[in-house]
Image (cartoon, rainbow, N blue to C red):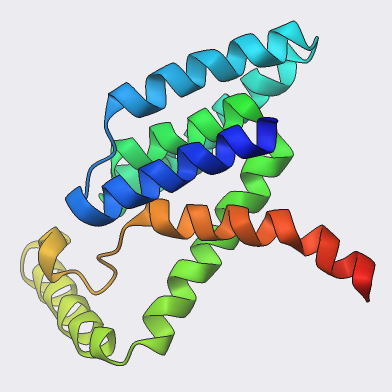
Length: 165
């Protein structure tokens, strides 16, 4: 049951992030609270706390650098409330790998990446400040919730794929 709830949460968040580039608190906060309650009812409340803390710590730098929004951070924390630190950690790594793969496999993003790196270097050379491009002009402008959903789906079917081999 837990897997289906997290799957549904991520599916709705991915759709909202894809369409609006925003994940509402009305989705993430209740899911975080219900995840905590679910884990406490099962006697594994400490796993929920490690998952929430892990989701927060893993996304602290990307949110600080504006590479990820706070809605993405709260979404990963909500997933952590329903799971544990180890699951959040592996989901985060797999979703980042999927994001990087999408950048590498889409040649259109290469020119934007080159232009953004030049902008950052010019800003640093001239003013000792990193000039970050606007979100719309970023080479890595993507909906993180979509890749988190894809990572969860892959991670969910991977054990069954290993069993068949």
